[in-house]
Every structure is written in C-alpha cells, then in structure tokens.
Length: 180
Image (cartoon, rainbow, N blue to C red; front, side):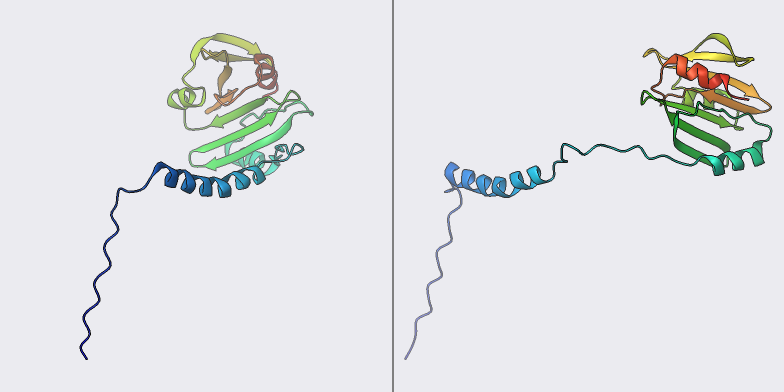
C-alpha cells in the first residue's frame, strides 16, 4: 500500500484582518490594564511624608575639616530634610522645610567662589549686598524671584538660598542672619 503524501495545509493569507479583530484585541488588553490602573491608585488618605534627617554628624565632620567655618542655626520649628557632607572637594549642604512647607538650603565649600556660586545659585545675577546678622552678604536674584545670599568666610564660600530653594526671601534672609 502506498500512501500518498499529505498535501500541505494552505498558508493563511495575511491582510484579511478586520477592524473588528483589532477592536477585540484592544478590548482584551484594556480588560487587564484598566483594573490594574485603578488598583494602583493611592487612597484618599495617602500623603507623602517628609523624611527628616539628623544633620549632627555632617555638621561635626564639616567643623572638624573646615573649622572655624560658620554654620546656620535655623529656627526650632524648621524641619531638617537634607544633610550632605563631601570630603573632596570639602562641602556641606543642609536643607530645611519651613512651617509653611517651603524649602530653604545652606551650602558651603572650600572649592572657591566663581563657578561654584554660579552653579549653586542657578547663575543668578548679583544685585548688590545686604547686611544680615552683622555680616555683609552679596545678594543674588533669579528672574523667577528666588534669592540667594553669598559670602566668603576664612576660605569658605557660604551660600544661603540655593537654586533649589522655594522659601521666601524673608526666610532666606532669616537663615543667613543666623550663620555664625
């Protein structure tokens, strides 16, 4: 008995898909994605919490290396949220949230003024000086109204109110006045 080889199945012709096929496929995808999207939404009681940090160790490390570089003493109701010490180049960044939930930052470095000041103030324009806390600070302002105060103290460049700051000029000036 000889068997004839089975005829190959005819190849399905492409291009015969209809819009209804695409709608069905999209419907299946949406059937999975939409419920997942709804389940992933945060609840009405979910809120972002501020992460408070302890600035003591970075302050101590800074004072050990850059003594007698001055440091700020913010009001007690300001919450510390940023503390970053770098050894090379020697630098310190400290940040707080004011009671109005506005951010204000202090930065210091021994790396020198020019490029550092341009970078940390957002290349703000120098607009004179201001006496704050018995010291003369150079005032820098950006077109958006944010203000930074800069001064040199014993080979250290101090900046209060960096480009990240959202606090009012009064808050920035108040912090600068505490730098001793």
